[in-house]
Image (cartoon, rainbow, N blue to C red; front, side, top):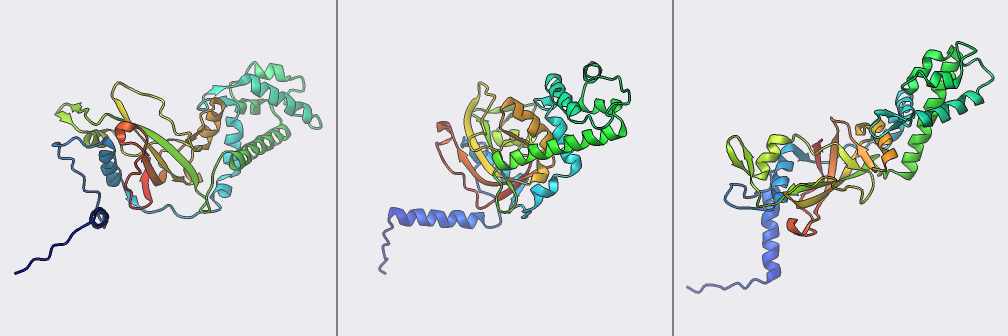
Length: 295
């Protein structure tokens, strides 16, 4: 019986491998060897962990979300956050004095203070936050001040929308995050003994994290350790409802380019790329489509 010999080109082999991978992807996770007998790149283990904690799909379209998220209450908080440093915990009293003093001078047509003899300097000696001035204001003064802060918040958010954020047709905001992973040959230790990177991720993390950047190229790794070896860059989109706008606006004073997310946020990931040579160079990791995961 004659046997037919089929000669396969290199491209034929690539096509076959590609088809096998596509079949494995249908309805199941990536089949990666994490049995402890091999030392794969840690990004492979990260992909396995990622697929266990999220799902393939896209966030719902919400083209008017940015407008709807800007309620008066939210704008009030944003306006007040402009008087704080960093994560919104350190009151910038000098800057507040400048703004509050200007507000008082521009509103001389009404009685602002409960005590007509009160002065801006006297009030500044007794306050620790913007809200504290309310104790010194008349009802008319309170209404003027709150309207002023809301307008300040609106101007701040308009600036962000027009100059900082990239918003797509679905109303989602671009975000990126760089993640520093350990070297592939490092083993992790627990009370039960050695464990691999995948086990460590499962033990320590439930989501992908709240610290992102709104800027292309802004997702940097800030902290390294002796085991640092691999970086991956995660790119995606997030709903305006899932952004911690108070922390985000406050952090702008530190030139962080940070987009701080709420702790219940979900991110739509469209691309993950390795960045360091030890991680295999600029490899685009094999997501089979957009992917949603909590932070």
